Image 1 (cartoon, rainbow, N blue to C red):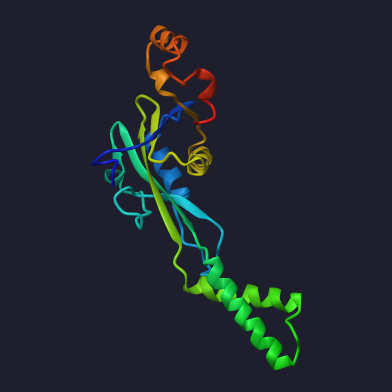
Image 2: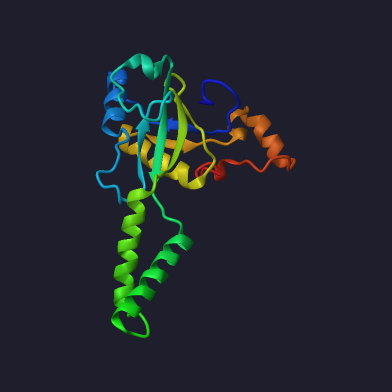
Amino acid sequence: MGILKGALSVRRYKVEGNPPEQFRDYIKEGLLAQAFHEPASKTHKEEVSGWVQVQNLLETNFEDYNSWLFEPYVLFSLRIDKKTVPATLLKAHVDLACKLWAENKGQPKCPAGVKREIKDQKELEMLKLTLPRVRTMEVCWNFDKGVVLFHSHSESANDHFRKLFHRTFGLELHAEQPAEWLDEDVATQIELRGNSDFSETGAEDGS
């Protein structure tokens, strides 16, 4: 829980647009609507994502304002789960099953169609026994200043975060560069002297 204690390495965003007047209820309803939910199937292998409480990744109820609203800050986390099976282990199981199939059928090798069926079946069996890879990334939203901090530099995670944030709250996020925090004259002088790689043109790509 680095956002409440310890050092942080974050991506900073400026919120474009304004939420409605009933801001607190609006945020609560958005978090509840896009909260994380476990997939119904144990063999689900697509990414599953949603909001969770910053204190515990298993807590997805945002009814209690005291658990996520610390005015002027809103604190929550993005949770992303994905199930995968080890490729080398899956191949070993498939190869062994194909070998046994060929021996039982008196065939020199397992046909491609049968091999695909065996692979699909083995993958499903392994997925049922596999725990998902779980990632959580903390979010701090200062709604007075319209600034959001996201605790990840991963491009894929940030892209996922921006899309889910917009889907949840209907607000766009603009990635800020450190040079944007400076006075315009100071930032221009630093850029002209070649002491910084930061520029306005690079702000939109989130780099």
